Length: 335
Image 1 (cartoon, rainbow, N blue to C red):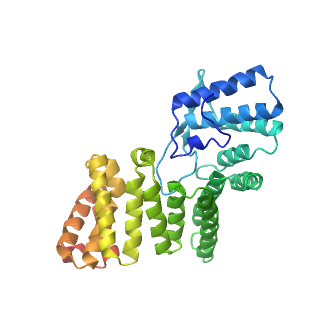
Image 2: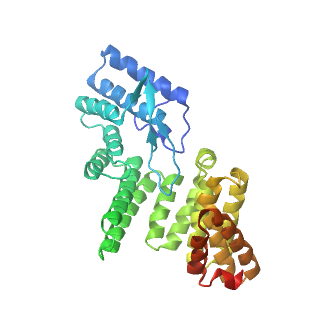
Image 3: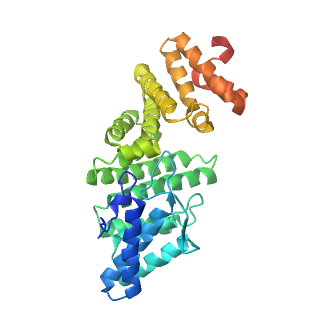
């Protein structure tokens, strides 16, 4: 029997499990389903296992400011046929028919119904995740995923209500709801780097910079080698924390974090790559701002020149406008 528990915590971002082990779990589930000799409860678990493993095997991890557990663009081919998300929903539906109080199946249904951009099923997704939490109050992954749903819901509201004066208050409510869910997830799994990272982002959006720094620092301390190597979370978190220090006018600490971010980029990425330029070129702007406000004009000049140099292939005028906006002086006045 492969390593497995019903939560399938092994497939959450920072837990190591190989594709071979996932295939073994799926094969065991397929055998139970095909023989159809087990109890309803065991059959339900088999359907759940198959859905979970197919989802994980077909996921392509993506990096961003927020992380769902078991998140990723889904694509998987089995026996010459592509598995669709509707196929996963069907498997989970069978699991729930056989065992109607299975929180793990409800959480998976919540993930499948959340959508990527449109969130057309956001209410159903939230209901599924809330049911999972009701059935299993210590389900950290469900709390995390519901928090991320609040984040996506907020993005949709921003798009739909540009210019709405009440939008800022709606955002705050969503952020506070997300923080409450993530606080529960952290209470259950206090050493999970992703949950601290996610909560830090929401604290930042509420302007609670000290709380954000504390969470980002915890995320750095708790991040596994898998997170650092595969998702480059150390680069992401240091950059985020540097911005919080900048907001608090702690320029030395901001410069330290931005410098480490750029150093890691040089080590982990080809400095000439489009990824490096598009993802972390703004770190040069932020460090240049920190140097400038700290009175180190020479170092600020070096960073801002490099920033504009890297931006020139993208949008030089945009880069110069950003220097003016962030630092308060025109580039030609300091370069």
